Length: 283
Image (cartoon, rainbow, N blue to C red; front, side, top):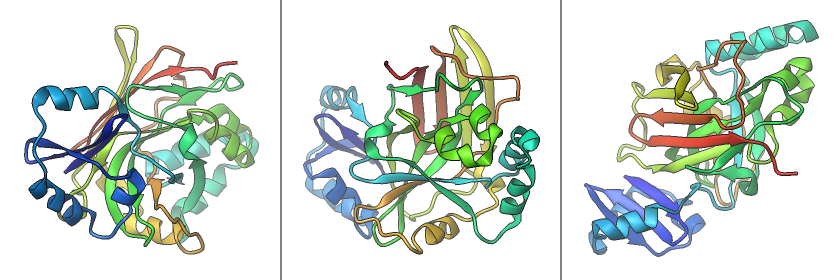
């Protein structure tokens, strides 16, 4: 099932049909057995006509309410290598090797809801950074009980030049206006788990040119989803649940940096495509 948050209401897509669910977003998604709850709606509601569905989905919002967004780092070997290289001159390269091998994962706060954008909206790069990249990530929705209930596409925008200066600059490299994107929907699988054969695809377009593309399967991830969720919930409570980006295994080459006007398209099998134009924070 796919659940969309729009300006006009919540849309459930299941079995090739679309349904309008009139329930407050945070109450709707933050529950045990989310799939079963949505399945009960499907049986009770009338399907929307095609033109009604299109009218709702043209105003899609990021699938977030009051939730925070957190992120995991160095969960793929490619990410470890990239972060070791960018911080080598600052003397921080060994930290990432140690994190990759450690029992405790790297978890960091990414964004409050008002800094998160959705499909079709603009993500930002920092003016004080000369090296900026998107990070395509499978993102978990975890309910207030610490249970993974759904998945979405995430873009963890990152300023590699700032983080490379010193690992302690990570919050500035990761957290700023429109530094996170989620969408286009929540994917709620019947079995509760997403296939390990799922692939993440990244395409960056500049004008009419494809300037970078790559893909990776989540089988390449070193950490387990339940492991990451358990560490996050050890000493934190999330009354409305939370979103957790699970790290990236796709990193553009060191000579590449995003430019204003670029388009970032992230596709995850079974979920959909999150597309965002790149720009700067308005002064």
